[in-house]
Amino acid sequence: MKKIIHTADIHIDSKMNRYGGDKTERRIREIKNAFFRMIDYGVKHTVKVILIAGDLFDNKEVKLATLREVLTKITSAPTIDFIYLAGNHDDPAVFNHEKLAELPSNLKIVTKENNTFLYDDVCIKAYDNYADEDYTKTLIFDPNKYNILMLHGTEAEIPLNNLKGKNIDYLALGDIYIPDIAAKRLDARGIYAYSGVLEPRGFDEVGERGFFVLEIQKNKLIRREFIKNNSRTYHIIDVDISALNNTLEIELAIKKATNKIPSDDIVRLKLTGKYDYELIKDINALREYLESKFYYAELIDDSKVNLNTIDFANEVSLRGEFFRLIEASNYSPEVKEELLKLGLNALKGRKIDLWEY
Image 1 (cartoon, one colour):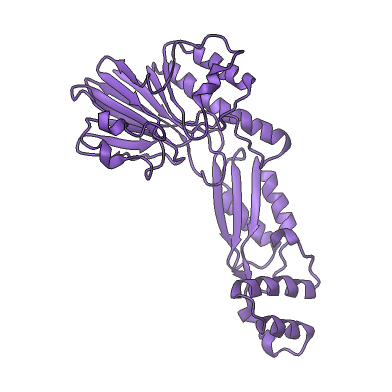
Image 2 (cartoon, helix red, strand yellow):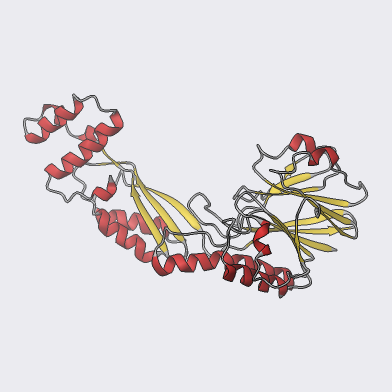
């Protein structure tokens, strides 16, 4: 039985500027460690090949220290072949650095001339989907082998229709950051899937991330398993404050909504709903509370004042005059609501946090 790992979009040396200071440096290191952790898994579980379907690095220029560290880790796993296909972010030429020693023999860099790799009854081919435009016309697989094709690109960029009927068993893709837990059907014989990222980097990558292990025996895929690999998970949580009356009640609602999230994770919490005009909510206090609970947290106030609870339009007061002035303006309903929220809070003597706006 042969075990093959399908991964992509590691994006080593991503900037991670969101966090600032030591947390930024730690997150940069954690991206790299996710790659190293996958290699450790491969060694422990006798994996034969690791397919890197593009974007090992986040940029086409990579620091020499990073290259040396990556190569040291690859060299430390001589029983595993690393088949590396560049994506749209990185460039395989980075390994041509004049200060690098000879590359490890188990690192197989995909080029136009070096794109086919045989492992007994398994055949792996890889192409630069952006440069090798004619590969689908000449692509040939032995129907008696288990055939893997590795590409990088979105589904709109991958010529899926032209790959049907080519004896492909597994199409290993990179460039989409969400893992296809359930592989998609390519044709009667083959399936295709994106591996997603190893370690998430932003709130567009919520949930678990990792890699796939393929177990192949006698030309058949016996098992395809997703292995969770991320050290931190991103979460987006909505908390409706419509029925709440004060800051403490909101804090308790936040606590209830987040109580199952590990403290090492990264959270974006949105306050939603329409609250009573009389409600006083201390956004700074709520933000401090949330930030104290997690590695990194953001609080976004998308809640709105429920203006239907009070008849401002007929009120003889500065507040009523302000309400009528805004209502008579040519602003959009959304802008009117934000102006009313800001102005009415100011008239009530509340501290205005422009961070909310």
